[in-house]
Amino acid sequence: MKKIGIIGAMELEVEELKGKMVIRRRVEKASMEFLEGKLNNTEVVIVRSGIGKVNAAICAQILCDCFKVTHIINTGVAGSLKNEINIGDIVVSTDALHHDVDVRVFGYPLGEVPQMGCLAFPADERLTQLAVSSCKEVNPEIAAYKGRIVSGDQFVSDKQVKEEIVSNFQGFCVEMEGASIAHAAYLNHVPFVIIRAISDKADDSAKMDYPSFEKAAAAHSAKLVEHMLPAI
Ligand code: ADE
Image (cartoon, rainbow, N blue to C red; front, side, top):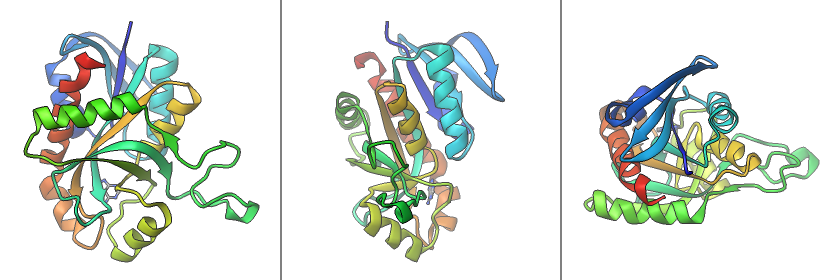
């Protein structure tokens, strides 16, 4: 039977989903609270991982080991890396990579974790397609883009840093957890997708925009996740 692990880094990214689910069991592990139960008639485990790549990886591994999830969805907000992707729009992952990994000295391309055999971790194509088509149904006024999501332990709020990340990796948006969740899912052979709504443009305006738009953006992403669950 399918069982979907849903990870948000911050409470505001999962609070609506938690509020709507029928909770059967609460389990605390690694200082994270895992809520198991049903959402939109689908078996789920919803959890707030905390911010950053280490928290996210620990969380994804617990979902695989202790809850035996069959799929992982990461919902949340991100900074846009493309002019045409605006605040409020949605980016659904085709793949994800760590923009802050650099082992070029031993011949690895920038961003590749040595000995993984791939630069970017591919998202599940069916989940990606389903998220994009669900977005058109549930949020018709919001544009949904399919593309690469890049992650690092850094809030990007500087135009030059943004431009460097864009030219190095051709990402559609930047955040702080997706690649770690993708990485853990890849190692555990669990299909995943990352769904992020844009809260800022990852440049000098990000510090101002982020607090104003994070709540509405997080809600867009969560609404989409809820809607797509029965079709997984
Ligand atoms: N999450 C939302 N906006 C972000 C940004 N600009 N950089 C990193 N993570 C983010």
